[in-house]
Amino acid sequence: MAYATILSAIFTATILYSTIQLPVIANEFLREQFVDYGLNWQEAEKFIEAIKPIGYIALIVTITLIILGFVLKYRKFSFLGSLVLYLPTFSYFASVMFFLAGIGILRILWLPVIELSPGTTWSEKIYFARSIFELGDIVYLPYDILRIIVSFLGYLSNNIDLANMFDILSFYGIILVSATIFFLACATWLYNKFSKQNIVTSGIYNYSRHPQYLSFILWTYALLLYDKYIFTPPKGGYFAPPPLLWLTITMIIIAVALYEERDMIKHYKQAYIKYREETPFLIPLPKKITNIISYPIKNLYKKSLPEKGIEIFTTLFVYYIILIILSLLY
Image (cartoon, rainbow, N blue to C red):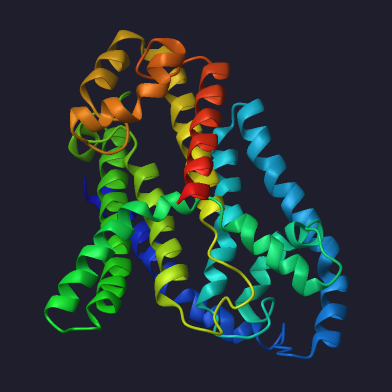
C-alpha cells in the first residue's frame, strides 16, 4: 500500500503543478520564442502563414489518434488524443495580445478551424471560429445556477465581489477535488494491481466505476470555468472559451469508459456485471436524475447502458446533438 500511495502522490502533485504553475513558467520561456505581435497584423499574418501547416498536421494527428484508439482497441490512444485536443485551453493562462504568443502557441491546434471559417479577412474568420467554439454553452448551466445564487446573495449583502471570489474559489476547489479523486483512484487501483485483483471494487471504486476519468473531466471543467469567468483581457482576447471542445472530449472519455466496460464484461462476465449494477458509472446521483439522464438510452435500446459498439456511438452522438441544440437555446 505504501508504494501505491507514494506513486499516486507523485502523479497527483505533477498534475497540480502542471495545472497551476507550469503554464506560467512555460509562457515566460515561450514568449522569447513566439513573440507578441500585438496590433502588428502584417507580421502576425506572416507568422500565421508560416506556422499554419504545423497546425493542420497537429490537428490531423490528434484526430487520427482518437479514431485509431477505438479502431485498434488501444483506447488509451483516444484518451490521449482528447487530452491533446484540450491542451490549448492552457493558453488562457498567458496574458498576451497575440493569440499565438508565448504559451498561446498551443492554439496552433485550432488554426485549421479559423482557416476553414468563412470570411475574407482574418478578423472575420476568427469571429466565426469563436462562434463555433462557443457551441456547447449548456455545459455551463450547473455552474451558472450556483453563480446566480451567489450573485444574488452578494447583492443582498452589498458585497459586489462575492461572485468573483466564488469563481476563484470554485476553480481551485474543483482542481483540488479532481486531484483528490485522482489520488484516491490511483492509490486504490495500484494497490489492487499489486495484490493481483482483477476487478477493482474497493475504496473510491465503490462510489464510481471510473474515478480517474471523473477526475479528468472535473479538472478540464475547472480550466473551462477559468477561461470564461476568471481571466481578464487581454488573456484569450482572440478566442472564446471552448465549451464545444470540453463537451467533445467528455463524450470521448465516456465512450472510452463504455468500451472498456464492454471488454471487462467479456473477460469477467457476471462478476463485472454485478459490480456495474451496484456502482454508479461516474457520479453517484439520485435515482430520479439518473433516470432522466438515461431516458434516451432506454428509449433507443431498452437498456440502461449501451453495450455494442454501434450502440455506444449512436447513443453518445444523440446526446451530443441534444446538448448542442440546448446550447443554441441557452
